[in-house]
Length: 245
Image (cartoon, rainbow, N blue to C red):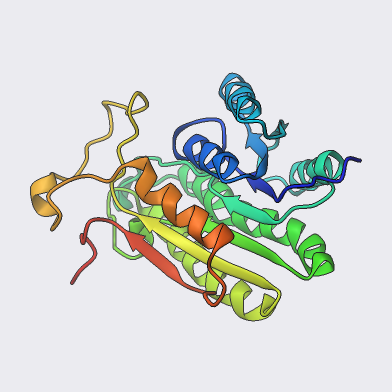
């Protein structure tokens, strides 16, 4: 085991899209980063190599976050590689089109298992180490869908709503040594990684009249991971004002 001389972050779903941007932002801030992936092996390796080019240490860790045995193995792998975990970012998620009247048991189980159970398992896995260190930060990537009723993505909305409540419960249970917060993004466009099959709300219906950029989310992740000292149990909506009643 190599004791990292820097802070160490573990980011789930770090091989692509927002997870990739979070990994890179934390590395630029001086973190060594464990990059979790399930299917995006090539993407995770690319992220790791980019982080190393910044002069930071990094390694990929394969795990299905909905499986406790794989999560436990991943966390032990991070501890073996770096010696500590200072920040966990629960980002891994699936976004399945599943209207309320058409939701299948498979869609429900898959979404809840990854988007909610996965957050619980990964958080549960790092808590002993963070309490041992007497410090740690858990940042959950929720969604505006956890605050609004997204009828075309019912299991997703239910899971993300659960993430928000889980954030509050863990924050109260783990204070004062571990701070737990969540971020609820609205529509964030990631250059080069947008699927044409996903239809977004018109920017005309967003008070800021535009979509968000990855930096809108990563800036908040970095703040919560490094500078916030009196914030826990909160969910920050970053949505251009879309959630305003």
